[in-house]
Image 1 (cartoon, rainbow, N blue to C red):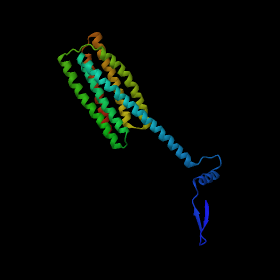
Image 2 (cartoon, rainbow, N blue to C red):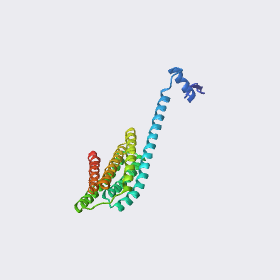
Image 3 (cartoon, rainbow, N blue to C red):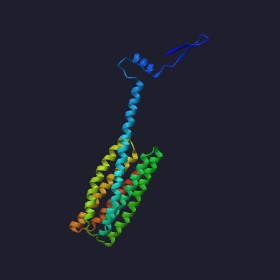
Image 4 (cartoon, one colour):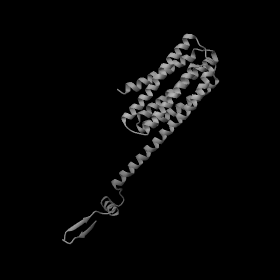
Length: 241
């Protein structure tokens, strides 16, 4: 700190420079001590870096889910049409909803605010409600008419691989969402977990139909999808209240 004299004889004090301030702080706290301000800035920088890394991981998980389901829609459409399978058609629609859910999460991660999160959750819930209605009507129609789906080796392979991929993505989203304390990412992680469970259910129906001729296993797999879709809708909308 410097002292300047003026013409009138008064003394003017000038604020110390940054270097002088650090030297003064070192003299007060001790030569080996870390200044509290510097320590706080270091902690803030570390937390911001960690959060940025978690956000990057969240985006990567969602983009991977998007890419997989875009390919899945094409594969499942071919398999469902060739096998005339309700379960495969329903799982294809579930993949379409998963694309919408992942898009919503990417949108939500790009911004902040509780209202934005609530809108994102409601959009995911509406998608699952539509899926439940379609599958309920279609599966009931197939059982009532005794419609027999064909065998589908393509559907068996794709649902088996998809189940493994979805379980891995769901685990990653659950961990990342918990670390970020982000309810939308955590909810979409449960959606992805359900996607893996649905793939497993559809796979079992396809295998039973192919190996034992149990044609009714295909629409029953559709009812499994209805159950999980309704449960997720209930959790989303009831949880808002």
